[in-house]
Length: 81
Picture 1 (cartoon, rainbow, N blue to C red):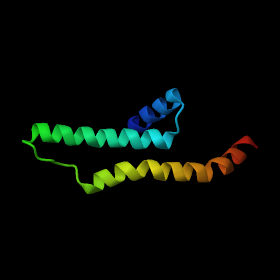
Picture 2 (picture 1 turned 60 degrees about the vertical axis):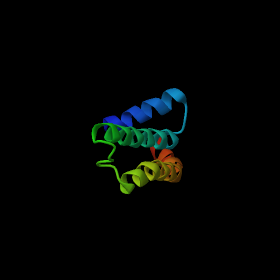
Picture 3 (picture 1 turned 90 degrees about the horizontal axis):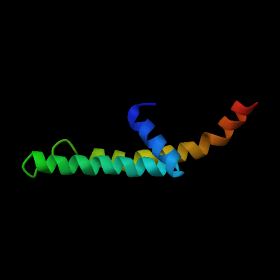
């Protein structure tokens, strides 16, 4: 787990929220911060953040939630035997 994912995991654990939901909120917060900083430092121009960044920030958490629900029970069955 890389540091970005680890902080999301720690937040979701402490807040007792689903990892995928926290991931979506965290990613959107990071993108919003990058847009704000870009506007501040580049004379009101958005640099380095485009539609792909925003789409991936929103969709990554939902993909994680989908696959977690899909493989959680089979994985628990394998690991508990």
